Image 1: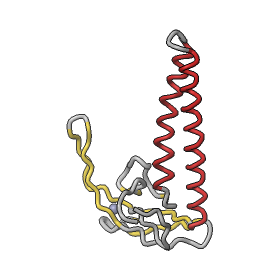
Image 2: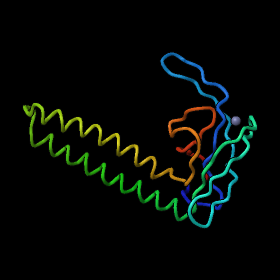
Image 3: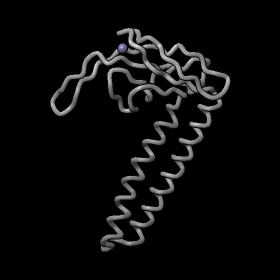
Length: 153
Ligand SMILES: [Zn+2]
């Protein structure tokens, strides 16, 4: 997989067709559609396209190559900060030892939070394609952008 930024984003948007409970989890089925919006030469362009499944308007923001690279740099900075936080907490855990009491609990909580931040920022850094749309990265609503797209770029 390449992370090259083409003239059109490769991240798709999705139309959620069904969302049903399955045990303690859920099964979500959606249709993928290409975002055929050309990247602007600078900044970002906000536009609506007609959903390929239901025809409703889906608001999509597409960033220029430059803006997308700035976001990637921002995520990378986040990766470095969260790795530093995690490392500092490991040092904290080791230095207070098993009888550290509150300091040990604090360092351990920081370590767990740091690991979460490392995973979150690495995923965003790797998958940043300069596209924003309805819904959250972990999906919500009828339309959403599949941020963590692992398909061909
Ligand atoms: Zn739709």
